[in-house]
Image (cartoon, rainbow, N blue to C red):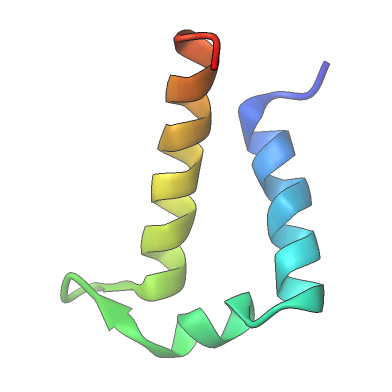
Length: 55
């Protein structure tokens, strides 16, 4: 069974190759983090929370 991080990595690979996710690396969010870094962190925490509450 895949870990949440492995699931996220699979989704990120797809989105980076097929979508515009790579462009997020060029823009800053919250001062020190790129929009990409922020998006990845939020997605990871969301996946973990969804698993914890069985969603």
